[in-house]
Length: 124
Image 1: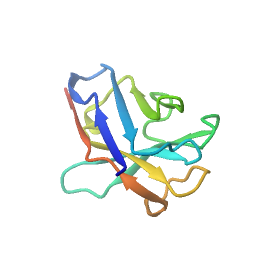
Image 2 (image 1 turned 180 degrees about the horizontal axis):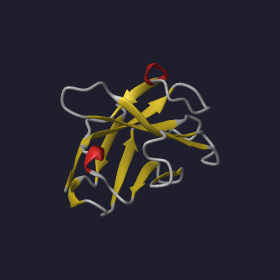
Image 3 (image 1 turned 90 degrees about the vertical axis):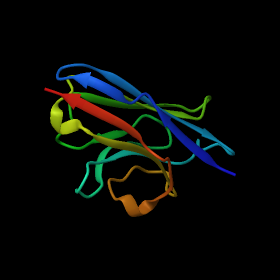
Image 4 (image 1 turned 45 degrees about the horizontal axis):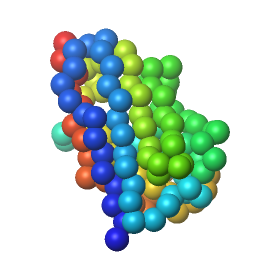
């Protein structure tokens, strides 16, 4: 049984930093693209960042570009999201996801496996 477990969320003040982790178990996802999405109460889930199978190609939503960094450790089967210069509008539940494709995408429909989410709250 495949599992994705996010961790690292919490409460932080504006301008602070958090590092989210997503640990996968059950099988290796070294040939799959992975991504982070987020969802605030009453809003649709939105794309945050993605990385392709190699870890060399990344993409970011305009709202987080220059502040967030996505990375992966294929040996540990773990995905990371380093979040810097956090803003109140970053407040949301953050979800990691595994794509059925090897190349990254911002479209949620190509991601077949999802974690249960970790809450990030940024206070002003």
